[in-house]
Amino acid sequence: MNIELLNVRIRLLQNAVTVDEIGNHKNSWQEYYSCYATVSAEGGKEETAAAQTVEADTIDFTLRYCRKAAALTSTGFRVEFAGEPYDITAVDHMNFKRKCIKLRCQKVRR
Image (cartoon, rainbow, N blue to C red):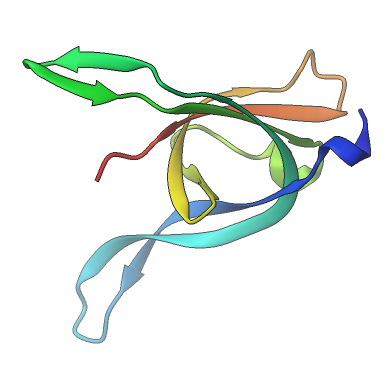
């Protein structure tokens, strides 16, 4: 893996339950890990759902293998890139060689 290709800083966020001062439980995203990654984007695709045209932005992030990155799952984590949140749809461990991990992500609709 070429280190010079890891040129974009991303933040990995973990879903956590927080309790406020009066005891209400809320889901929130807290920073889990921050690292450099390679980004390959597939922009411009559109999907039609319920007579609406919705832009589907999917991005692949490739990052170096480490223990924190190896613990990532598609249900409990999210990627923040350029101030925008992306849901992880798939985690690929690249043949389990422990060199890099690829995250397939989709932009969160607000």
